[in-house]
Length: 185
Picture 1: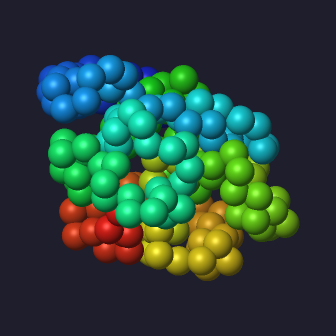
Picture 2 (picture 1 turned 90 degrees about the vertical axis):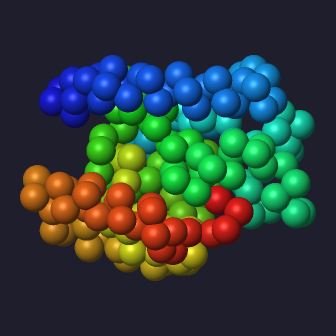
């Protein structure tokens, strides 16, 4: 419950930034400004994850790495919000709703069967997905599913309030240094 209340306060606090990003997307490519995606939640349930839309409306609905020349679909403002990971700010809505927490494994796409099979094998699906996680700050998009799940298992074993706090704050340096982040993401 504390996470949900904190997320609401953060949303209120960053509302001017949210409004500014929304306006920039609106001017660049019109409505909608938010993008929703079906993601896997705790205990292999599904939920709708919110993100700022960083790609053009006519972009095929597949993972970015599966697009031929993904850069052609990225909005001008999308490049900036992706680089700074600002497209993830609407994830605070998911935390406020109780679908996510601040720190945990990043929610898998509904069709990432290989990743989810590994998570189920090692009990990771029991965790609520997070805005950030141990795998996020130790490789993010450039590690294999096996490496990601190995990091998530290590997180599960070491999970504590202070470990979560350190992961949360390390996320900012990782995001701004683009460590382990694909160029197209």
